[in-house]
Length: 332
Image (cartoon, rainbow, N blue to C red; front, top):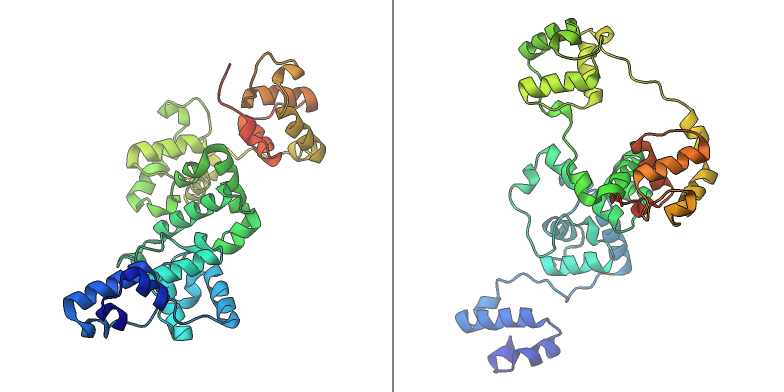
């Protein structure tokens, strides 16, 4: 302050006081408008206080873990929340920008819900569970896209490993957008008692009476009925839950039994072969094309192991082999 009052320039004050130029410029504007007293109410923060090794170790651990351990909602932190936690624990009030700097210097920028320069809005703490889960899915997808392992993402965000593996498959196939487009659980919008009575009447009829060709209802058909009538989307699993609660399991086709053949056939040797095959031209395997597609890999695998897998399982095989990015949608 004394340097500014004596007319010393911003750059020189910045060097002498070891403060950033934006900070010194802010002080200069305050002094010019309100005199020395204008700086008195400012809280003490910034680069002055230093964190010792023990404090830094505690802070890194706190950032890595869920904010819920400190009474905050959401899977990721905001700079405002971290400022409060640091002040409560260490008695130091850092600026939001310095907190952001610390988080980035620890390599933990992915633990921030949004940029360190923005402040948490009043509605952040009131975000719905669906919104929190959607944000966590997006964060997981971005971490996977940037090369984080499944185990690291699962531990960091508190998500099950099988779920993260599913996200990784989706990211490999369609990027972050594929995860963002996940529909919410069917439990978000429940059918009323009257809706269930209507559905019971439909399920007690034969599907053929409603334009379907099968003698038993399929989950997809029931899902379509509900969507067309009530505008509510339910997953296949939740459709079966609803039908079970109505006591009409016998009116719906049982799920296809899982076969052991796939798991027995696609072993490490086959996966290694798939990885090597996709790095070669399809012509080397008798396929008249320049690029690999799902359908062409399906043909090659059928020739190799004698099993005609679905398109979805072919994609999973390519993902397990780590070469899904070599498949293309081009047909020429």
